[in-house]
Image (tube, rainbow, N blue to C red):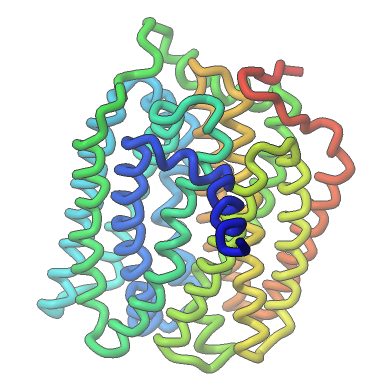
Length: 421
């Protein structure tokens, strides 16, 4: 009886229902394979860069070059996600990503790899990401019905976080045993997971916006809608604060693990895996609450928790305690960003979906490179624990403002759209 009851409980979990959609399953599997390869490479790349340069700002610079195109061009090029065929966008994007990883693989194997090459590939990948990511995010709405969207977004997020749970551990072991080249090679092949998934999907991925519009309207309409809509404006500022002043800890991970905790590449893999496990558990909880009207509350609690975890990381030099803080950072980051993603998709009108969603992506990915470079340089000037402590205070202030303006963010029911105000 107990086992039967458990099966019934699991079967009622809202996240399961999205997997009945074939295209969603195909995209999920392809994304998981690709993200796993990326996570395997990230560990090797961080270790390699720190060996080549020995500075924290160089770690931040990789993240900076990888995302600075989103910072500059994200809101401007967002209209492409509404006017281009999303299937073609993903196919070309995966080809570009694979080519970049392949070049770095060859450089490591043949012994001519240099730091500037890693920066160059990161910059090219950032340019691709600027158009590819909003297109990929908006596909979810095309392959699941509106009533399943709240469950589909965190379920899709699990692809990245399953990968972040297992990929770094694999990357750490492979880097320690065979060096970084094998990790870059695996990532090169992994991009074909999404490539073939995109070819297999049967959904209509043609342009969302088919009526001709002036270019200036295509560029600025999503941006204006975001800032004129009170709920989106508050959500945007909250996640922008976390992205700018908090997410840089991921790029600093090699320094945290080696300089503060005194661990090697295996320890680096474990640290990244803790972040992924925390994020994965967070997504499971979020998915279980998908049908409840509590998304704004989840976002406020998540940002507050992030500040507490960052404070813990700043004062700890004990691996077990630091790993716990990293897991909590992964959980709170995912809860805030993923739930904000869902809110953006629920609030934005269909014709602006890609452009408004690009503003969410800009807050998450466009501001984080500035934070990575800025806080990386500050860490070289002072020390990493002090920088982490400063960040915790800034994010705590942002979370407090979220609680103060909590009435501005109201979750719309399925089928409703928030009005601008």
